[in-house]
Length: 110
Image (tube, rainbow, N blue to C red):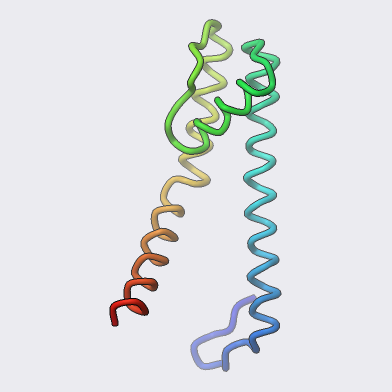
């Protein structure tokens, strides 16, 4: 899928196509995760759709739920969502942010 060290780099057009395809996949994963979280909070905790979106966003962002969870089912659902978030997004985001920051500083400050 990716070129090896000994192979030449992709032409810019193909690289941008690959970058867009990977970005679309990442966006799809985020939207599906948000959708599952919203549906769970709406039907398990009886939150309205906006509050369900807020809680799902906060869980995926690593902050935790905003509204108090009243049922044991809701607490278990939030726990599962948080474990899912840590497995899927936890450490990868840190590597991406660190890599982007170091790349920016090397270009900006030399």
